[in-house]
Figure 1 (tube, rainbow, N blue to C red):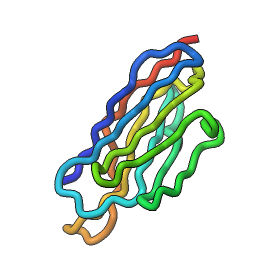
Figure 2 (tube, one colour):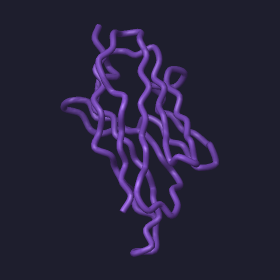
Figure 3 (cartoon, one colour):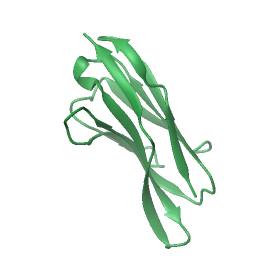
Length: 121
């Protein structure tokens, strides 16, 4: 079974930077799309950025130019470099991956446990 473990969250002042990591572990057959989502208090979970194993990326408009998603396909790890952080970036950040399951014969969407990012003004 594949698990996702995030790290790198914390408290930072507005204008600062943080780098999140998410590593997939377990018996991995194939992982295609990986990404980051976030959920602020009282709000729905929203897409932050995704990356395919080809390297193709997609970003939410609110983070374009400030956040960068990258991927190490050998380590099954993705990163989210967050610069110029704003108080509105405060949220729990969740890692997400589409991992192939041999038991069901298709890709399943997995989630990590989340890591809290707090940006103070």
